[in-house]
Amino acid sequence: MLSKFMPLSRIVMIMAVASLVIGVVFIYQGVSKANMITEQMREEKVSTSILGGNTTPGDIIDTAAEAQKAADVIKEHRRSIAATYTDLLAGGRYDPTNPKHLSYTQALNMENYLYMGVFALGFTQAITVIGVFMILVAIALMAVWAAIRNKKEAAVKVKSP
Image (cartoon, rainbow, N blue to C red; front, top):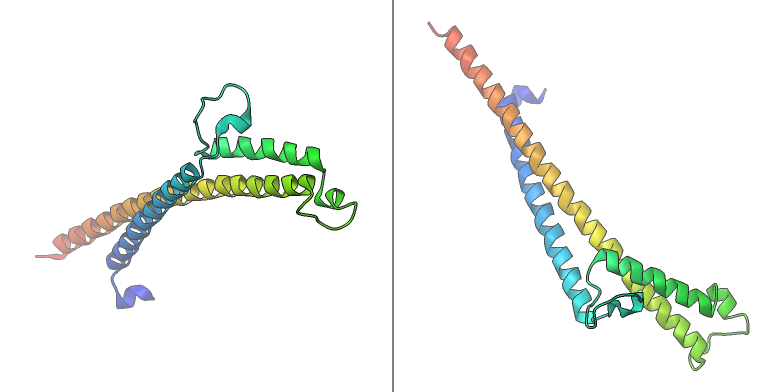
């Protein structure tokens, strides 16, 4: 139906150009946001020393893998204070002057911050991969467009006297 209004080759080329543009935008957004997140992690200067073991002094958490490991360690530490938030409050209400309550809250905040970094870096990586895929689709559509154009030109030459 659409080919009545617009030749098939134009439709394919429009889709190819749209796919190419979307792919470039996705790659740009993925890479730029990953760089921004990494830079924000570097500004926070959370030391890899919380991971224990052989860490270089001054080394900071700035990758998804490091953030995942650190968040898991902090979760273990937090659960050693209280297995759940309900267990923490077993004695009554939250008391910010209670060092145990305050440590639990700080651990929870740090844990969430690190897990959010892991998620965000994974998401930006997925967006970048989708962008690459969109560019590959654009290349494939351009090849289809070229094949359609060549077939049309061959049909015109055969019909010409």
